[in-house]
Image (cartoon, rainbow, N blue to C red):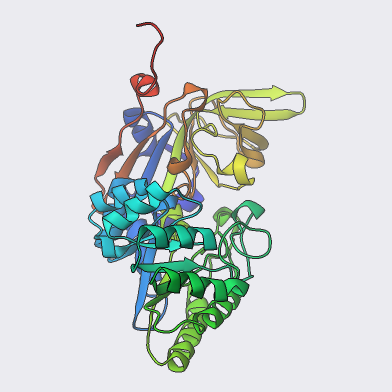
Length: 421
């Protein structure tokens, strides 16, 4: 196996002693590959974020809800949040107790809300109407409320989840109405939460949002917890030297805010964060096979089997993912080229990397897409009736285990009903 362009995975010892071209042969491509060591280290990074004693890290399962993945997160002492009954179901399978799950719902039906209530999971609502609905279903129960602190941040407008242009959260101006609904149904407000957006690389906006959230918290007596949200970013352009989020500096500023609030509030409430991407993104890559190299007019295209049905982020958010190259043969790349890497979906927008400078790539090469563990497989689909990829995990001892089977053709038709009866 020849390492044609492998700067990032080499620096991380990502594949350990495993040959990625052999993984591609054994399990087929496209293939999601996870590294257990990196996953566990990211969990520990955030558990040590602050010195404040009552601090909980809730992993956001929407970023990656693979069962084995959740089991590892659980073993590292994290708790978890959920966005749907499906996530609650998987989290319970992974061993999380109801008290370790925080259901953050958004515009959900009575049936979904009742599922969480019956499961014994604390729910957060994010509108007055949803608070009314919760009160009707669970009179005298405990509830949390998501507020919009007025501060948003994120890498794309589609993932900014606070501020003046988003659907999320209760505007603080409606706190009097919130209190009326709580009293009407004898509900006990035990927590408040926020989420400002996804993938911030500077902590200033997050710290500012905490101040706003704490001002809201002071208007409610006897809260048990305050969830500060997440959105912690990772450097997707590692090969270009992009710096990581400065967790140490961010942690110091958060600590100052939490300790000051505890003193003013009169007790140490539990503070929570809900990072998903930071924990899951960097522990996963996608392996794909190059099937075509061609020129169309003045552009060179590298065609592979990683279409946007496998990884939606580039087409959904114009997102950047680093690409590395492995090769089974000894043929050398004699030059670098500007190429556009595309998938096998029948759409012009099926572009994995546009105008990327890479070493010369040949048919049969194995491509490695970096940082694919967040919003990767969970957003994959059967578009074009293609099969969703398998997932494998490189254990800490170097063993490789299959943690999700590749779809079969039978899976595509499993829930369809023929008219030919």
